[in-house]
Length: 149
Image (cartoon, rainbow, N blue to C red; front, side, top):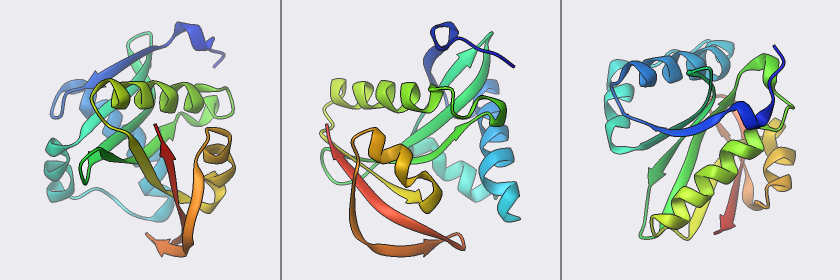
């Protein structure tokens, strides 16, 4: 699938909506199933307190992430996923930049993530800094990365 980045729309996704279900399916296919994991009803219910975003192409999610409020002014970026056939196209950078703008517009000044080792170069290109020692999460190596917005 070829896609021009300008043909995508950044949108907030309402928890429990049909679009949310599509975003969960994308996250599940790309981030959970490859690790032999699946979402539990309790995990998905807890996501009602989070902010969910997607890039849509022709009304369908092609990239997504969620932001989890933490201490005052801080958000954790989680579950960043880009459709497999579109990875490397710049959609991940567009998605994270739009989420950062949303965060700034809503009074947040600090974003962090637990980046899989394979994603560290991507986050470094987006201006994130590695902090703290490597750690294991969901059975794979991760790094704590942050950015002042």
